[in-house]
Amino acid sequence: MQMTFYKYQATGNDFIMVDNRQEFFSKNDTKTISRLCHRRFGVGADGLILLETDNSTDFRMVYFNADGKQGSMCGNGGRCIVAFARFLDLIGGECTFQAVDGIHQARISKDQVALQMQDVTRIQSNPRYLFLDTGSPHHVQFWEDWDALDVEKEGRRIRYGLYGEKGSNINFVNPLDSNRFQMRTYERGVEAETYSCGTGATAVALAMHELGRLSHPEVVLDTLGGTLKVRFKKVENGFSDIWLEGPAERVFKGVLK
Image (cartoon, rainbow, N blue to C red; front, side, top):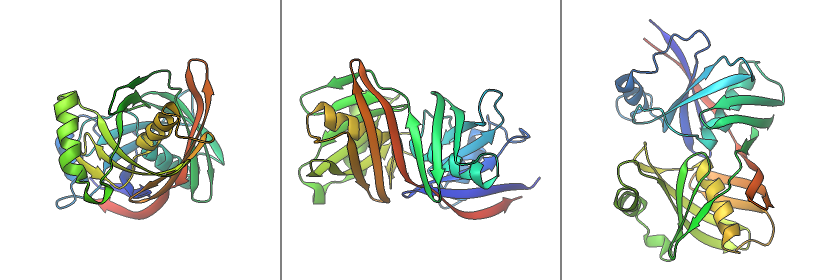
């Protein structure tokens, strides 16, 4: 059997995209998915995403981490699947889609995709870090010696040492000004640093507001792979109308036999 796939990237967070509206792709074949995501023996990606039919929205997103297991929400992956759906002529400039954490709205203009994230009602504050769920769990902390930061070493230590086997994504933050921050992320499921993380960028933006580090509710996040923007509204019970925005583009098309 031949399978056509597409490679997409969003600020360096890269994904294998498959049009699975005919449901030919097995969601239980963890070994094959992890092999396809492997950067030496497969296509190479931070994750694999299936676009499927959904009765109540424009399409459904099914996301797998690079380890082959179905994952929690992926913000950059969500933005990539919107660009993919537009390429397939399934949508125009706006859409809704179903993901593991519920329904999302999105807007696309050229290579820019804005994705509405789910409301966040709880942030756990600790002396050295904050923890919150933006569709995926995220640990957020400042790191002073930025140039010497070993993301894989420190991220893995915190991911397993503090959160156990279930784990959390680990975000390190360096402030540049009142609304701009550098960030680097160790992602569970990939078990390595990624060039960018959309749910992580969202988590950092909300955490910075919680700490009183913002002058207004629109935040610029500089990742290894490029720049993301997050805007939101502070409400009585948390944060709502949260939007993650940045580029998402097709890299190439391929055929697997």
